[in-house]
Image (cartoon, rainbow, N blue to C red; front, side, top):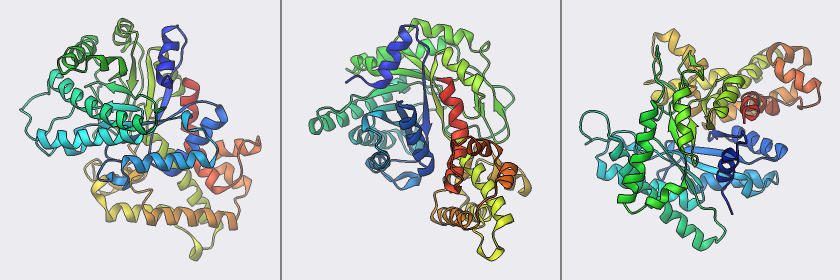
Length: 429
């Protein structure tokens, strides 16, 4: 059976404009609405887990790749979404979380990571060996080193796939994404003034170097499994800023893509781009649109709105106080935001709540925060939200309820915050 992303590439070679959003999240409400929309729209859904979310040591979610696969599969089965409509993917698979280790150990961990993803049934693998490890020399990594490490990870992934295929003969062969110009996962850590678009010659060099090095490493045929290259088309976001896509700035890069009909570009950090910008990106060949923080940002926005209505409707002694609980948990465990947010205490407090990079996503699944969220939902069922108040705090959801497209239920309203961002991606592809 042909991989859905290879079918997408065939359509693009025929001149059919198409693409796919890639939802990168481990949040259960985000995953649930992504699966539900795939069923409603009768489309494949691409869901990615990153190396820091899910790895052989548990990641920050506590899940190994097999756990994540089974969680998503169970959620899909609950709504009768066929397994073959789900594309599970691994993002930034490589030394991302082991950059403090020497190459031998970092790559040993990386090979095991990629093996476990492929063995579990993930079929889109981003081989990301662009980051330096502890004993790398000064200066930028050469594309050759990046490609050679990528070849090692490709071999590990195919070993996992072959073992899976021995158990499940119909297991889908994985496809791969390469590229050394990879934006930092989760957005920029500090404000930037300009953003450099990948040069066409750098893109060409990446592909030609991978072709040569993989042939030298005995996996030259593996380049046929590569469907996309990660480049920087000029999009990024930070705490308060978004770099919008500028087709004119990326015109030379996108023209170079025509030389390689078997691949497309994968755009990372496309969060918060406008619907028109996303549409233009797909038109220009950036056919895989990665989005992550914006999804949980939309969820957080909706939960904050619900919490504000709770303050209006629910007696003080019964309130869930979701906003305050999230802040307390983030302050008690600062590791996932302290290095990313900058400024005085007031600025840090605003970032914890509202930053586009949404480091709150690391905490929104913590038991105390989940408990507060569920209590919030229960409270707003006991003290129902009046439509006039809903219009004040959630006007887009209000319109959907008036049109009969959404139920007036707090959990559904929370997920609709995610849907608001997904709609832009659906229209773009």
